[in-house]
Length: 232
Image (cartoon, rainbow, N blue to C red; front, side, top):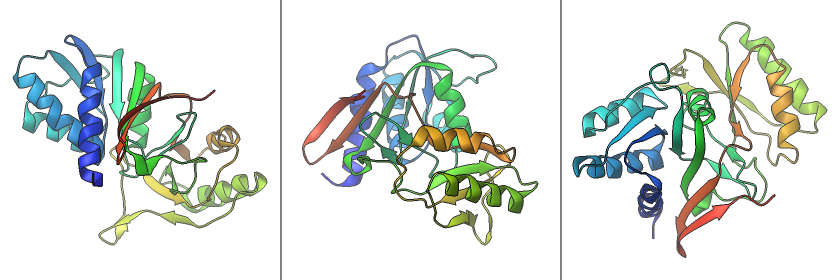
């Protein structure tokens, strides 16, 4: 099973958790897009849900495929959020934000009773940090914020390049109008401490550590589709 097929199978398995009448948070990224396409087929067959997308790109795909949409102003409480991840550890702590939608993804996940993460099994890691950690930052004071991130990480024994994300030669701008700094710290032994340290920096809007948010992970690969629950 190649990576694309694995993503499709994980997304297909996640559909078994979607029930008619649900208010559904719909994630961003390549695996979530596979989920949207499969969900659209079920909607066409009569499944009744209302979706709250985590990005403008997801919203556009939902409209294109006929998935009915709302937003958190109209639908502030969700039954379930389904989203992808860049890394998943045994506690189902996540790194997310490779696509740049981490702020909206975290807001939607926090509004849901449950979160299911879907991925191919290459995203499974023993310790988070192989994938650079996205940190969404305010444009104002960017250089000072980067220095503060570097200093905070250093106090936790973490070091590595902090790279302003670019696209087409210009800084990448999130749907919320912010920049993203990708922090290549390597292994992060104490994710909670890093999370707290980043949140203490005024210029940090959000970061891609999703801790204690996912209830279930559905991953697919050479061994088929597996459903994982957090190791406490």
